[in-house]
Image 1 (spheres, one colour):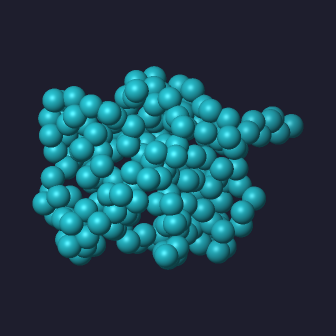
Image 2 (image 1 turned 30 degrees about the vertical axis):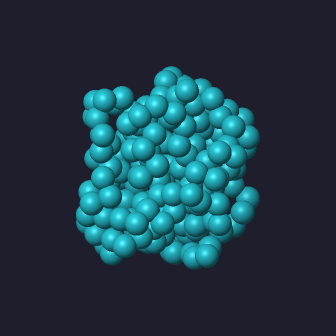
Length: 206
């Protein structure tokens, strides 16, 4: 299932800190374009998510486990690293993916998670046939989540930066989900199984 689709660091405090993570959950953009969602304590296991916004299986993963991942992050139980990549070689998927990923780099941290939701909601369909993620649509989606970045999105300012970083990544397909460097299989799509993998078996209280 995981390979079905394939073959500055400004800090924002995400507004869902519930008091369990004393320093607050922070979403941080790294210089390579990855986004890190963590509470700042640094001791939690690391969940790396490699995703292509034009990938239907990535959309499925997102719909199934994103709420669980964000909850565990705000509880300080996991450090999430989102890696937007372009893995498709054929058109129109490749260009769709590039436009969306470049646009995501324009969006400030405070709006990025909501923009990511919008990208999956507006994913072009049917896959492999439909062109989409036009720059006008992407700019409108950014405005919808409170980011006025039309010039950056429409000019596709970050295309080359995205392609350069994406080319460095060696994965078989998307989504690819790693927990402390260990690839997760279908369990990544099951909220309960994913949570158990992240926090471990708590055992039995007697």
